[in-house]
Length: 307
Image 1: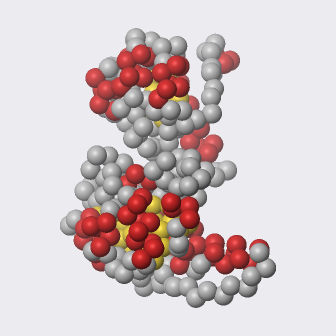
Image 2: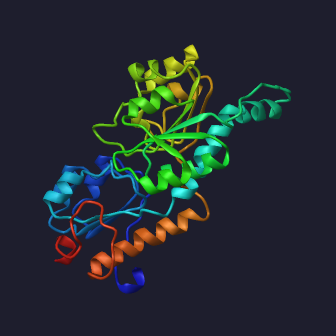
């Protein structure tokens, strides 16, 4: 982009609202990760800001209603990391059910800790959110010989039939029936804190929960309590409600809990795909050419990017 005469400023994110407010107003475009693009940031960015290009697919850090109001296109990168996140999901699941993380750490310390694990063969996997990532998880679950149930408001009947997935009418039905619950839904007002004490109480004893979506979907205190009691047999998460977490974050010391630092989509294969897609989206929008993968319904032709 520099070769095309554009001035580029780079900072290591995710940036909080305070820093974004310091930057706002000086840019025609943002290429962002999980930086806080709030209404206040957007208001201060006007009238110069023309487009926002998200590196990834999660939009919960961007005030989408405000972007629609200000006619600022928000672009994202669907289809670039679903396979690697699905692989990471199974990495967490196997790490917990086979005690791989715990026993490997013990072996490094000279302890031959031979814990007994569980098979996932013929266990029931409940998928909440059967989108691109959820579907890839289902494909892999079928290869492992798992029974698959799922909830998604936008049901793909052909895919479900192909992989033998049983449709659940509600999310609660998934939670009650599953031996393993895998979360692959977006963070919204509806999903924030949806895995909480009351929901966990209705799950099977010893249920394993995998979260490669957003940390805020799970109530941290309730999960810590459920792990301590054994109601939840294991929690594997690539996301937390605070990232990076403080040293005293309760899940870091919780039993039967494996936390990875939001690296589920971070592979040598997926990172270049995401980077190229987000950059291509941005260039196309600013130049008024080509498909831009708009996420908020504001066309790059009709919105501020066209002006």
